[in-house]
Image 1 (spheres, rainbow, N blue to C red):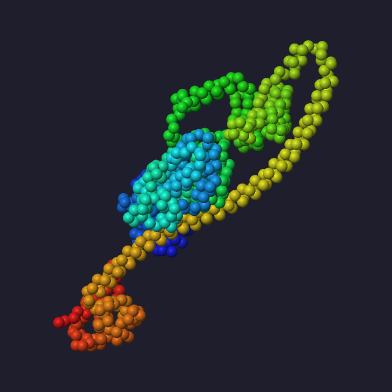
Image 2: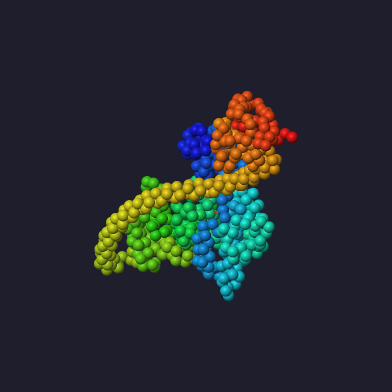
Length: 636
Ligand SMILES: C[S@@+](CC[C@H](N)C(=O)[O-])C[C@H]1O[C@@H](n2cnc3c(N)ncnc32)[C@H](O)[C@@H]1O
């Protein structure tokens, strides 16, 4: 499909065919080779829109032609790369988020931190720095307002993949336009007035460290209290967004704040973040049991680890703790309330077996024969009563042996990261046969009544358990239906969010385009003024006509040779009364347009003034003939 040609390009890019997507891949490969940045995981629709612009700029017909151009012009890859990083930003953008941070989220965060540790924040994708300085100002305001509290130091890391944007951010100088977004109080308090704009004050500048950093491929900053990554995810494909959000969760400590852009959301990772204010897109990182370092990504940390490390593996302390648990503790499994296994110690094979069918790490599916009903009852009771529940002397049938076990389920509360998790402990018990022989046969008859009673109780218990399992199955199936409906809603929601994201990124591109057009417009106005002044100061009567002899423009001196007023622009010259004695203007103009050779004629005007009249073809910059220029030089 053809890409160039304004609106046509947009439509055809959207419906790009296989050939175009192949060309697109080649474009991305060249950009990767020349700049070292892989943009294949950015949204292709956004990339295609920027490509359409490059085609128009270079007057190329299709993407194939652009690939050739890109390969032959080394500087183009860098230009395209910069154009793809849409750096739209301004101070206190989408102000709701800053209000929520200032009035609720940050004060609560500070209240929950007893220590005097510096507040650590990371602004990822900071563009030219406005967002990082806005955050620094808000944090300064919150800390200043906490009368009586000990002052808290602030350390903000602000990063972007675009080193030119980072350099601008570092300079901290902004144009006068920031008055639109920064209140006069903040301008006075946090900025220094300079010739044509403002410079951020040292007090705020010193709290921010700017660096070039690739959010996708470089290790994240860690131990953060706040992570602000706004209007960056909207440019990335959903799969990459889903990969980054757990990284953000890892980078934040529990309770840390995540701030996203208005069209962005935590989506499928809602179990990692709770909304502080869903509309303002401020979220709190939830504590989770599993906070393992991220595979494949080294972790950036500024604090040195205090524990002794054995090689690159776990700490000696961790290893010792594991060895002790393995040697002494009974077989134990850590589960969540649904029975999903989060951790299992050794030697649980006697009681649990891999489930048949698709991979299942749910303890209820894995329980060996004789254990299942008791296990589900014990888990339910432990959750309901919130205390340890033990069923002693359960007979569990394995593949070759039968064993007896005391089963305990212990709900956990402390530390908070284990909240709502349960320990299932299997303590091997002596088999009834052995116990009986040890205590002698004499008591056997006296116990038979008790044994019968016990058997009856067991039967009753089994019935109750079966009933409970039946109702639990019903609840589960209702739950599954609800979950399916929920997933349906979620996917619809994501589709809506995606189109909203698309609109938002389109909007940002339009804003950039608009700014570029405004600059061009200003340049044109200046050039126009220069030209008019030049023509007027030359005092030479001059007329500009198009190919159909319509008046396009005239100099003020031209009123000496014709009765002209501004409203005459657009009229055919033969309809305007000339103040010269000359009848063949139309014919001579037609001659010049045909031969492209200029013509000179002697004419006399009002009061007997004599002029040399010259008719020149009017050439445009792209060498088209678009009418004539007629000048009148007065002869002495
Ligand atoms: C639309 S701007 C958003 C600026 C600011 N966060 C805001 O919301 O006002 C997107 C920024 O993300 C940066 N960016 C894009 N991909 C990135 C990456 N992989 N790593 C870091 N920054 C990236 C771009 O260079 C650009 O400056």
